[in-house]
Each structure stands twice: as C-alpha cells, then as structure tokens.
Image 1: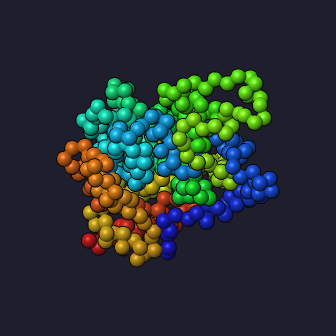
Image 2: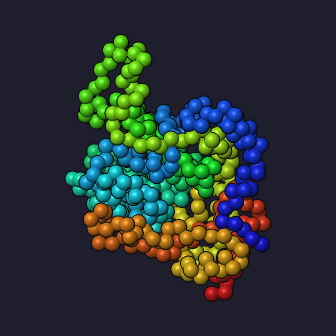
Image 3: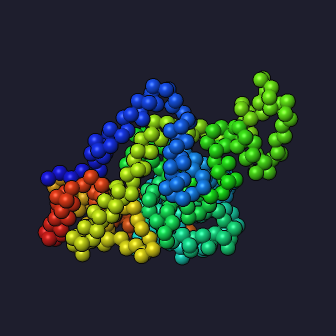
Length: 398
C-alpha cells in the first residue's frame, strides 16, 4: 500500500463543484484584485475566529512582516521567538531590520518555553513572537502576562494553527496580532500563496491596511499620524477636486504590495466551510495514532485546555534517519520538520541574531529526532492502520 504524506488532489475532487462556479465568475467579471470575494472571505474569517478585524495579504511571511511593522518594530529592536520553527518566522523579524532572539522550546509540545522568555528580555526587546507549532497553541496566558509586565507586543505566528484553540479561544485572537498562511499544504490552503493578519485593535488594523498597499490612502495618512507624524488635514474643496485627492494617489509611509487576490479568496471561502470537518478528521487520525503506535516513540503531549488542529503529527525517534528510510521503502510518506533549528541556520550569525543562553538543547534534540507521519483529512481507515503497522514493524525489528 502507498500512503502519501498529503493528498491535495483528493480534497479538490470533493469540492471541485463548489469552487468552479466562483472561479468562472471571477474570470468573467475580471475582478481579480479586491472586490466582493476578498471582502466576503475576510468577513467570514472574522465570524469564524470571532475577531474584529481581518486583513488578507499575499503570504504568511508577509503577514508576519506586516504585523511587525504595524507594531513599530524597527532596525536594532529585538524580538523574542522560538528556535524551532520554519525559517519564515525569524526571517520576517530580520526583514524589518530587527534582531531575532532565539529561545528554547518545551520537550512535550515543541512550543516556546515561557520559562525561558523572561531571561531573554533586554532594554532592546520590543515584542514576543510565539509560534503555534504544528497547530498546537502556545501557553498564551503566561506569554501575555510576561509581555504586559515588560510593555511588549505579542504577535502570534498562526501559520499552521487555523482552527486550533486555547482555553476556548481560537488561535489568531490570543495576542495583539495573529499572522496566518494559506499555503496549499495548510489546513486551510489556497490554490497558491496567501495569508492574513487578524486583530481586535483598530489602530493596528489601520496600519496593516496601509502597509500592505503601498502606505497609501486614508489608512496611510492615519498610520503616519499613529507613528508620530503630522495629521493630514484636508479641506472640502481639496477632497472634491478631480485633479487632486490627498488620499487616492498619495503615499504616507513606505509599505508593500501584499494583497490577497480574488481567486485565492474564492477557494479559501469554499474550504473554510469545511475546515471544522477537516480538522475533526485530523484529530480522529491523531487519536488512532496515540492508541496504536508503539511506546518506543515519543509522542507530543498537550494540555487539557489546548485543542490542536493537527497540522502535523510529529513523533520523536532516536532512529530518525532509519525510520524515515523504512517508511519510504514501504510506501508511507513522511517529513522531517524541521531538521535545522533556526539558530543554526547559516543565514543567522552573531551580528544579526541572538541566542538566549549558552545553548538550546531541546530545540536541537527535537530537530534531530522529529518525524512527521501522514495526517490529512482524506486518509482512509486502511491507510491509517497501514501507517501504524509499518511504524510498529520497524521497531519490532530493532
């Protein structure tokens, strides 16, 4: 039997008839940027997450950059983050000229260790950027309490966490800002790149809107004012002049071109209606793994008040390389996220990053031992059982 690591075609086949009419409508109307599909999707996500503001953007990485800029993170500032995540987390910090400060993680859930955060704070620290790794929220009450005590912003990296919950609240509503990715392999994946930023803060939302569209318009003018610049004053005659509009073609801050397009919004809107069903199936697969996998593996342990969305099911194995090879030889797709912890990436060095403490042993151990098993909603019962039997068969031979 062959079990793919992920099967996007199977998911598409199930919802093809829902997606096709919307795509044809967009093509017929040639309304590709902005418009009703984007606006409707943002409203649907606001309702789903129970958050006041949603701003779609071009990617999850852009969402992080926009969020950092909205929080006024500047060159030379420090942002505390996890050492165990995809590169984009620390890359976004570096892209705004700030210094990522890497903190170790907890062995039970692979998330940033709140006990390690406070010792990493200096006079240069301006924000904490926790990552809900593999779709399991961090211990946000502790993180927010530390941030409040030190006057820091908190920006969630929710790239893998849509639909997950912490103490009854969904990821993306647990801090000043939430940053999501709609890369096709995500639990809510588009037909290309896409992302969004969520917040309950109206001023942060205004700045996100400005930075994602060239710093222009009323949002740009208000952003300039929020960040210490002069307020834009406009007379009635100026507002109504055909040749002059102080908002339409005037740019007040340096921004980006980072917009979520209509085609992605249409696809995501359809998939959002199925997201809870998809995540429930992922949870059911995870339950089967917990019940059936050998105790020679180390499985993640999550607090009772945490509801993962199971973006990945990651186990730890001291025989990582051999196990992955055995799975591949027997037709079981697998992944090795993430084989290099962020503080060991060649892009980072003593000049552009900082490691909190002498070493980060837990992050390095997890990177050396992490194996991702298939966990996608379209898996059949036979496929789930085959994965369990194949993993166990590897250990029976040891």
